[in-house]
Image (cartoon, rainbow, N blue to C red; front, side):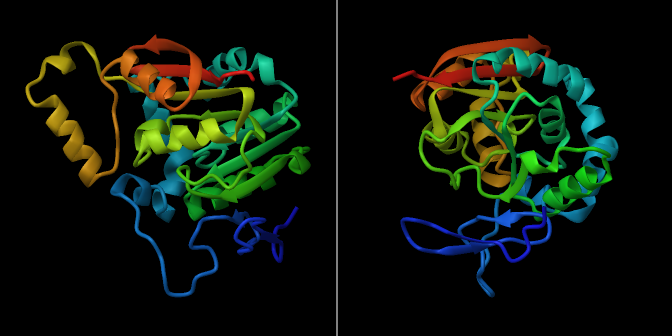
Length: 259
């Protein structure tokens, strides 16, 4: 239902967060009148109304050229990794316009689906797509605006986190994955799709310098090996890393160690 007038208070700092018609705004700067934080170019791009509108209307379809098999196939692949946590709560991180949010909700595989994104306009698109669907289980979905590097959830409170075509857009993947590890319950699962540019690309001179410049200017990240992503997950406290490839496309999975 509508989140207008909804108020949530942090148990630690007592800050109050409010809701709009479409989502709960849980970023640190929520409620400020003058202050705002600018994010790297890759993040700000997806906050624009034009890109948010076009994302499911042509933008995402072009991912097929990078080996992405398409949302429905990617969803089926992700379900295999999520079998151990079915029936729990899942966060669709960097959900965009909610393609996977809707698939998770309609599947009935999870008790609660949290659609999380930093872009207000992406969340508005997500809300509109949900409103257009008949017999959609709206009671299972909550739309939340939040920073992937500062997740507004208690530690060990989430069963699964899914991030479709998002990891390479995060300004600090290590900070984000560490936060994901924190909020996952023991045995919880992280599933993500991204690009890996290996092969001949790794032999280009100054590739690491180029990557650092890309992260500094655009705020985007790209991996050059599966081991790099495995090391990222391991250093953030996740185990059981797996990777499935189709050219540059990669679906990775890891889980929080069971207590």
